[in-house]
Structures are given as C-alpha cells and as structure tokens.
Amino acid sequence: MPRFGVTEAVTQETSSLGELLHSFVGIASFAIRRVVSYRDIPYVFLIMVSPLLHLLRFKGVLKTPVGKLRIESNDILRWSIYGVFKTRFCYIRMLESIIFRNGSRSTVLDVGANLGDFTMAISDRATRVISIEPGRENFDLLCSNLRLNSLRLVVPLNLAAHDSSGNLFLTGNGADLTVANFDGGEPTIGVTLDSILRTHDVDYVDVVKIDVQGHELEVLRGLSSSLKDHRVGLAIVEAHPHRGINASDIVFFMQPFGYRLTATDHIFGRPQLYFE
Image (cartoon, rainbow, N blue to C red; front, side, top):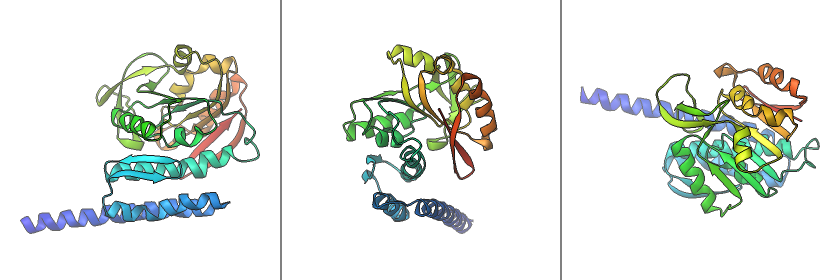
C-alpha cells in the first residue's frame, strides 16, 4: 500500500510536469511567432529558461525585462512568467503598433493587476498608475514588486472593481482569481471604478486595462459615468468566454457610450478588445 502511494504521487508529479512543459511550449511558440525586433529576445529567453527555473524550484528575486519580480514558489513563478509574456507580446505589442503608438499613457488604470507585470511595463511612459488587485496574496506580491523596482508613481489598491460598493468573495488563486457568485472564499471589498477615480482626483484616464476573469461587465458598469463623459481614452478589455463572457457582450455594452472597437487580439481563446 505505501508503495502504491509513492507510485501514485510520482505519476501525478510527472503528469503535472508534462502539463507544465506543454504550457511553456505553447507560450514559447506564441512568443516566437510575434518576435519583431531584438528587444523581444530577452523575453523569449526568459520563457525558454522557465522550465529549468521550475525544476530548480527557484526562489528569490528574478530579473526580467519588465523589472524585478519576487518569486516565492513554483506557482508564483508560473504566473509571473505568463504575466510578463502576455504583457509583452499582447498588450505592449498592440500599444506599440501604428494604431496606438502616439497615444498618451500619462494616467493608467490597471484593473486586475495581479503581480504587476503590466503596471511595471507601462510605467516608463506614465506619470500616474493606479493598480487594483483584490487578492491578498497577489496584492502583497504586487506591492513587493513595486518596492523592488522603486515605482513610487504607482498607487496599489487592494480592492475588487465592481458595479457597486460592498463585500465580495473571491475564488481560485493566482492569475485565475475571480469574484465568486456565492458567499464564501476569500473576502474582499467591491468598489466602482468611478468612485476610485473620484477619490484619487483623476479627471481623465488615458489607458484602462481590465483583466478580471469573467467579471468584465460588472467592472465596466462601475465605470459607466466616466465612459458616458468620455473621460477614458483607451479601454482594453480581455474577454473570458470560458467564464460566460463573450467579446460581443462587451462590444454591445460599450457601443451606447460611443466607444468604437478599434482593434482585437487573441490569446489562447481569450479576445483582447481595444476601444477608443
């Protein structure tokens, strides 16, 4: 019986490693197809060495092209690498395209900041960034990463963007953390983005990025006043069809406010929508 337990554990670990390698191969292939300049090479290199870092159970401060990231476990390593990958080869790639390259990025709202990859990458051109992350563990790592990189212009908030104020609960973990549709899980506080902008005396947001794992429409409803008054320049929303939110739902919501879908990107079945 004990031997069976050991064998089962080894089998599960081997299976998990196989799934991890498959995931890294998918990410690496996606990144390589999007390489356009020498500046992309350090990102590809980081992705390629990630399986080795995972096998070595790396812990400590990891230097990446977007900045230093604190790694405390293999799960955090995986989420960090995925965040850096998506930020560089999706969000920043699109913002550097001819469509958006001349747009202002002075004031940025990062909703669903996770560990801070997008916040760190966009901070070089921003004068003010508000980063919202509801998960306590994620938020602690976000703040740690901001300190490591001396990003004092960033205002981190441990809140959940929502369509009203009140108590909420979170389910999942790490990059997959989302607002639960039941009472239970990790508690957090829901606040509208309109309220957050008023509290911090922000009259206009140049870029808002929303990546909230299926909570997109609630977040956008909480930004309705700013959208109605056209106090948002560019809205980037990642849709999550596997959680019941399709791109068409978001487009339908944004149209009455006068926002036009300017560009669309896709990452592993999740559309990223760019509205102006």
